[in-house]
Length: 352
Image 1 (cartoon, rainbow, N blue to C red):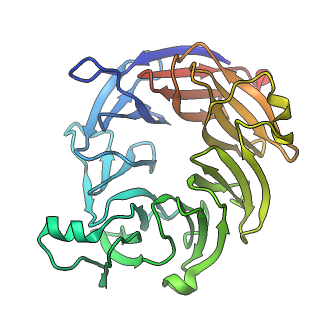
Image 2: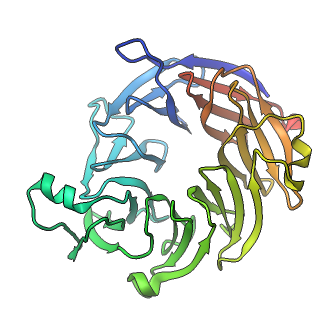
């Protein structure tokens, strides 16, 4: 795969390189967030900056492309909604949160926002807010709380519910089902991936369907398959496992950097870390994207018997690749790295 263009994002005021944190391809260009918590839009053709969308005072912890014009970001103080067509450089909507948010998603009908929080000492939050108690949706928060928080997005965002008992540590991932508005999953550093259905009962005990115990700290997790039939789990130690929706383990591939029958085809490929998993619905293939410390990245087809390298990205970055977005229809890939670069890659169908 060929690098057909690249740009180095602006450095900080001391001249230090800023990391590219996230990237999303849109019809208007490439939307990127960086380690200065800025949101910028870049042109596809020239890879020049088109517009500065805005910035957060708090760390951007998660980003979702709602559509080609609307993006949502989360941080320690809540949720912000951005319209890339706006020239005001401020969010068009803000949702304040009493707990720092690490992850979130919106239901497929865009009516509910679900956020997963960091585990925090609520005593400290009470002291800083000057309040004797903290509550959300009528429920009081106890010490060292971690939560799933729900907002109704219709009209003015309103608190709907809060789940307080499912996880015991940071909730690193929330993903909603792509076609069922009532179904979602959460994943945590406590090692659990939990699935829910809130159609009949919107309470924690009755809505939780299944729990997958990965025995490792989960960093990324999502549905995949033609109908979101499966779940993948990627740990912060680069362990990949696949699960069915009923919580049954399909396959545990272990750690990607270690020798095993699953990695037998990667003997000549250096793998230092995992980036994320991507699903190609046109070919019903799940890819694990990995990289090395020299700036190379690879697409590994996740097969029943192990990994198979199908694409390599080389010659664009010279440091860790942090994020990746792929247009499987037009055979284009966008990457962002710790070298402060955004690279655009292209290939022909025969190469893929």
